[in-house]
Image 1 (spheres, rainbow, N blue to C red):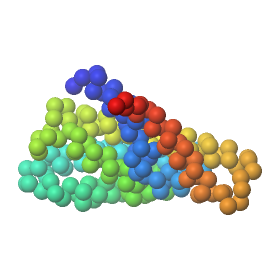
Image 2: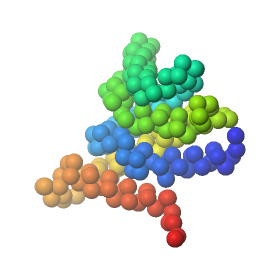
Image 3: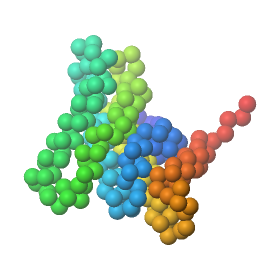
Image 4: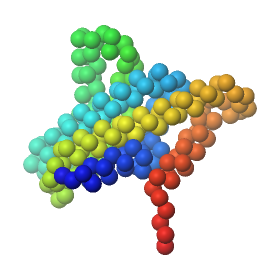
Amino acid sequence: MSAQQVLMIIISMVFINNFILSKFLGLCPFLGVSRQTKAAMSMSAAVVFVMTFSAIITWCVYNYLLIPYKMEYLRTICFILVIAAFVQVIEMFFRKTSPVIYRALGIYLPLITTNCAVLGVTVLNVNDFFIKGSPVSASLFYSTLQAFFAGIGFSLALLLMSGIRERLDLVDVPEAMKGIPIAFVIASLMSLAFMGFAGFQIK
């Protein structure tokens, strides 16, 4: 484990390889929930929570179940099932123990089940931190760190988008561009801006 590796994961997940603006995963909640900042904040908190703990659970499933029984080819379907089951358990837990948190999260927890960014980070963890069926040193820590900051990057993009779209309600937008069309234009410009974090390659 090195400080350089940790810093590289943090910067990469938040800015360079942002799941929404660089990998274009999770666009459905990005466009659907970004109309209001309050809704975006609730969705962001739920995504960070689910991404982080899903990464831990799927790492354990892959390392202790799929690899020993030579079933690595089932990782995608297993990860989908694990994420869906985890989200449902969390939803039921909050509904019984903390109605306030359950009402705050509302529909956003079930929406995460279909958020491909959560699946994307679990698959990325396996690709990055397993070599020939064996976890690298501090693999679980790196996987958890990467998932957490992938959620932070998702939240950053979502909150930036919600702030811009709220301001758009105050300006005169052509009728044909209102709603989703202008949102796609903004998302494209944001994506171009975030590409600058990758730097320039001099040939």
